[in-house]
Image (tube, rainbow, N blue to C red):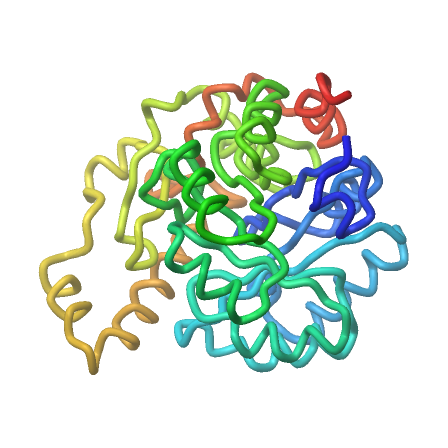
Length: 316
């Protein structure tokens, strides 16, 4: 099944194994690429530039298929400039931008032939990134895991198709073939899928985290602002219920201050990401596990290739 996305990247299937903070890794990316899809890794999954370069080099040594890197392009990411320098230097097939303006990324990637896909949650921002020269938009709807948008999938895709001419990649709620086909039928050129791949054998997560993906359902996923300052989906464990899901009154007050907002958000994000990091490989009563409503369709831990096969099973 050929779409704008598959033609653009030269892939067999229009599926991106989504970049997931502290989860996506070389093994997942290679498995996605060799399965005829593609995968991306957040640059922030690597503490140092040396580690980021090593990961990209390893992927290139194990597959000649396309893969990408996700960049947080706002001021809350102090590593952004260096990460962009590295990606432009070593070369990747595409960059997914999140949480900020992609202007500099697009300007520097165009001459290198690196595609830039931009996360968007509404048509106004989609139009802005189109005017900047983006190659596609990733439509982050209200069923997405991680940082989600406010609009339902069908509404968001319709708005984007009516207001910009870029290929639309649907992000949110895809777990099996029916969801993939529905997104394509709505006019999407592909899908970005995260949550179900948390339960892959290639994901280096604790047994407790992956057991939670199996044991909890869609109704157990809630939004919290306590981890990044923006709405983030997490499993509503007893610990999440205990601490609540909203930023403290003091943090909320500071986040409204134009001068201090940037620094407060960086501080909240730093604390929140440390909590997530600590929950990845070990369990405690303070575990904070990110996931989207698609956990409803997770019933076991399986090879990534098998999970991808479920999504592609009705592709013609």
